Image (cartoon, rainbow, N blue to C red; front, top):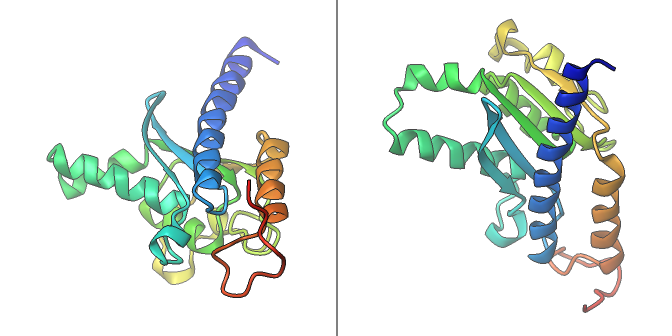
Length: 184
């Protein structure tokens, strides 16, 4: 491994550790523990974690939360609409679990540069597990130029561990819990 690759690997782990921290905060709020950070020019510019239970809105995944936070920041800073697309194309997203189909389509649509994720999402994954929206886009609505590079398996065991804790504990927000919720 070259020194550049080693440095990139260290950065990747550093940013994924921040995404894991976001996922832990979601777990504390009794949310499915997924967290992410968006990085531009080597700096975290936005972060998010799942808020689907809190908001009762199934679209409030970690990626959507981070995207909205970044859009609000850019709007506050007066970034023009035309510059938003350019800025997104310079961003890298680190997320603890492979983006679902909805999130992968959104990431493709906004023209994100690259995604690194922890564990695979075998039921709903949009970056290779079920569909490959990072390479194929979302059909006719997404231009070929919005494809993004995607790399999985970064700190996957840590991400899986958080899911195990969540599901062993039980989801108190599920419509019909399948098992008794363990109080901690």
